[in-house]
Length: 419
Image 1 (tube, one colour):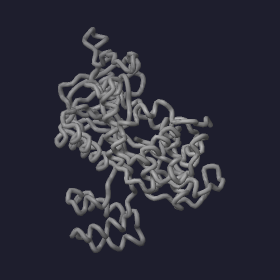
Image 2 (cartoon, rainbow, N blue to C red; image 1 turned 30 degrees about the vertical axis):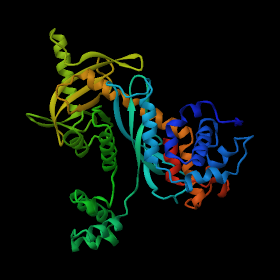
Image 3 (cartoon, helix red, strand yellow; image 1 turned 135 degrees about the vertical axis):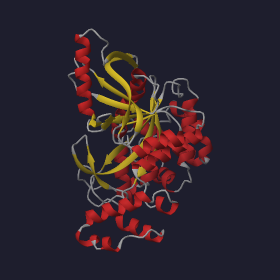
Image 4 (cartoon, rainbow, N blue to C red; image 1 turned 90 degrees about the vertical axis):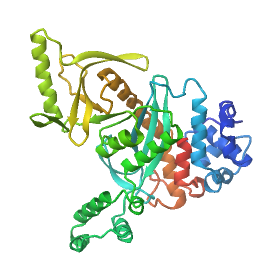
């Protein structure tokens, strides 16, 4: 651990961008906190406070930045974005792109607010975790998060009660499912919720990840009405409701990701994407044999100073549940022997190279997830839960942790780390 004798020079250089958000006392603690995040391995209040070996203070002073200071995290984030836009290297550029994604913050123990038992694809198992839905910006020079929302798991009984209070009639024949068939009951309640989600009283009962994504995007577009950057998402977020929202409500370009079992609607009927790709593969080989134009054309796209080569087919098709979209199917191998990646766009005149280039900024998002967790985002939330008494089963290494020294508010700590 590197001790600090003063605030690092980098912090006062940019701290004035955030001064309007804080009182003078809170602003000083904010600078100490940011300094600790930069250099401390132990990124909780006590660990950061102990870094300052000359200007020694009680950790409770820094603690009050999270527990008592009336800081608007939204205002703080707006200041951060204003700072980034003022610098040439980090300002948003015409060839930049937005990415929607979410990440799991896993924990040791089950007694956190808003925890859920979720599948972690990286570990290929279920874990207790928080789930952050966020919007990310990326271009060839830089990438950084724009905003995020914490997804909260649904309480079926609370939703059912809320539906009844909102005037939605639940079938009497379904009420008996609560005891002997809870999964069927849950499925029924969520079906009713989805059908009435557009009404205000029902809409506030539960915010799905798709609805949170819509809120984040709407807030960003409202704050930047002249910014028409395309937004891209992975296969999970490539859902008809979200794609229609982006296309018809926000009226911005989008690039989504399809799975191999998604359906392309052809004249002879729907066909799985993997079968359609195999058919194009045969047409491609036949065209080359006969000396005609290939179905998959070689293209190279720039990415972070390098050139990435693909063999790409780009056509307009109807995609089941999505309607007419531009469909791009890419292979990395010239013989098309590798698994394809497939994207759709609501821009019917775009070509495969442009769509693939816009999709490529999603790659740094995973790196951002890894680096954020390595820098202590998981640890901060664990410390927060210990401090508030929400976690009752030990610390990450099974050792007891001093609750008083770790007093952090779970939401505000993670939000300030994100900012």
